[in-house]
Length: 93
Image (cartoon, rainbow, N blue to C red; front, side, top):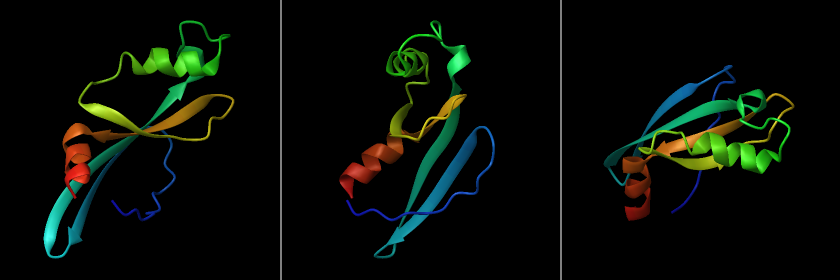
C-alpha cells in the first residue's frame, strides 16, 4: 500500500479523524483517532515508559488498533489508532 502524508490541525486532546479516499474512482472511508496518554495515569508512573504504554493500551477499545506512536513529551504520548474495519480495508487495497 502506498502512503501519503496529510497534515492534521494541532488540536489539544482527543481527535477523531475520518478520511475519504478516492482511488481509481473507488471511494473508501478510513477512520482514525489520536489520543493523548498521560504518564501520571500509569499504575506505576515512575516505571519504564514502554511498560506504561503497554499497560494503558491493555484497557483500550479492541475495535481500534495502534497505527502510530508519536513523540512523547514529559506529560504524555500521542497515539494514533485506526479502526479495525479501516485496517482490513487498507490490507485489501
